[in-house]
Length: 81
Image (cartoon, rainbow, N blue to C red; front, side, top):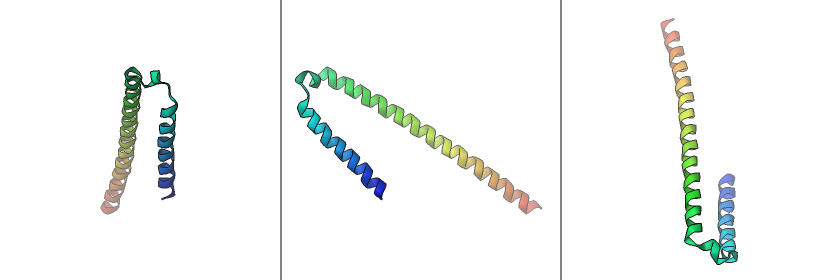
């Protein structure tokens, strides 16, 4: 529960900081070209995050399958003995 509150505080604090920084930025940094670059960067980060998470899930499934197979083989050997 404490980790959830910490993550919430960090995300909320980041949003407040972003709103404050938005008011300080000069107008040329708020052009459509700048916004397109930021969108591209966010897309890249989201794609890389999805890739990392999918590799993490695949690794966990592989480890689970390996342990499950060892357990099943052990039970078969125990029953046949």
